[in-house]
Image 1 (tube, rainbow, N blue to C red):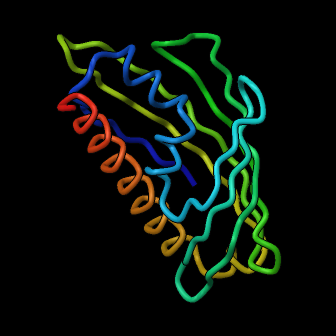
Image 2 (image 1 turned 90 degrees about the vertical axis):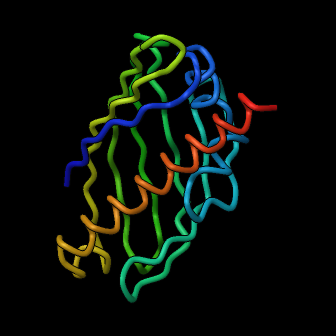
Image 3 (image 1 turned 135 degrees about the vertical axis):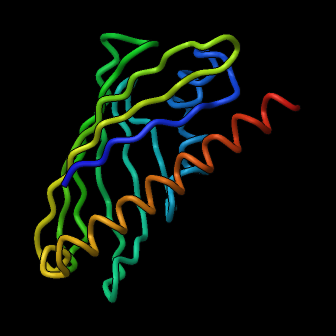
Amino acid sequence: MELVDEITIEAPIEEVYAALNDPEVLKRCIPGCEELIKKSENELEAKVVLKVGPVKAKFSGEVVLNTEGAPSAFSLSGQGNGGAAGHAKGGADVTLTAEGGRTILRYEAKAAIGGKLAQLGSRLIQSTAKKLAAKFFKSFSDVMTEEAVS
């Protein structure tokens, strides 16, 4: 499954990049996130509760950031386990482009799932993934707008 999208954020690129690396900001934005711990400079551990169709599961997983091209580009990869519900792994390439005082955030994400979740059908999984991504970026944009105002 692949997701590609872009969003304009009303904040300078440095602030957007810093927020994307702030566990507190990410925890507020990730749908269903119960816990997000920064284990090292480029490793995060998360606990997330998600409902996909009839399946509700608590996932625990790890995310590794590759910040080689920072702040204008970086990538992340991760994997999570939801017990009997199944497992997921994937990654995303993110680019940030300054446009005046705003930032254009583009991402390309790929994911693979297995277990009970994989039996739900690709349409349901794809639409749920799109909704979750849209919710994350809407929340992220809102947080960046709040911080710019305060």
